[in-house]
Length: 365
Image (cartoon, rainbow, N blue to C red; front, side):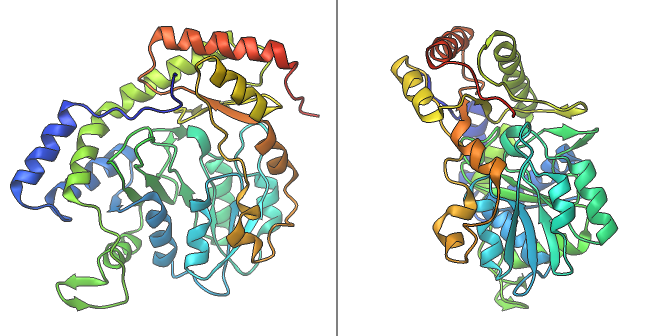
């Protein structure tokens, strides 16, 4: 079976981890600071704050902005639940809007209509490795004085209009094992706001600047030096890994037929965390690919507003017709750098065979 994802960890990461373990400093220390500096430089942001996951990165970014009960945060439901759950964790109200049908990212026209005096943040999702329209979103947000937190958990190294994901306002990244780069588990916040960086650093470590003397109520959201060591080994490999993903995607773009392949707007560098097709009958399509030895997955089969914590708030009836349609039609196929050219040939043949069996792709009408 050709898997949908395969983490790649080499000798460099192993050596760095072992040296960190031998140093005796395993908790948040010098390796974490080094990783923060290198990742900030990679993104082009002045500050980076390493944390325990992409979810805690989003959570701390909201807390750093002092968002809480009575506030609204606009986001999308076509994403993993961790985009929206931090909004509930801080006591704010998620406001879900629809996505664009070609990019699967936040619909800027709907964003314009959703902003109210209670809107205190906007969280667009740069999904599957394709940046949301951060140019338009940040311009609109600046006119209203609203901060933007880019959920860049799938967009390591992606860029739009010459600016990398994570360098638009505030960025939140995940380093889960299946991401374009990993630390085993972990996340990071990127920002150009010194005050926000200072506050999130305070919050991630029990609210303490001085040991045993908390200034505020904080959390244990730290990254360990062991995890940071993996990241230090992974980050230099990221450009080549992303280039391999783009090369595989280019082959798919050219060879796949009777499916809708990913749309990439002008001025955008897609890093293909996932290569996602629109196929119509996604479940059936995936089953037939599996029978041919090709893994696939639907990211994500249940939109966030229809999941239990959000149904309980009465959000399941939110009108999101594009989102509701896409969860039935989208399917991701393997695009990770561990694929051989022969594997790519196998995936192409399998997708084209199943597409011929199941009929034409969905239309945009």
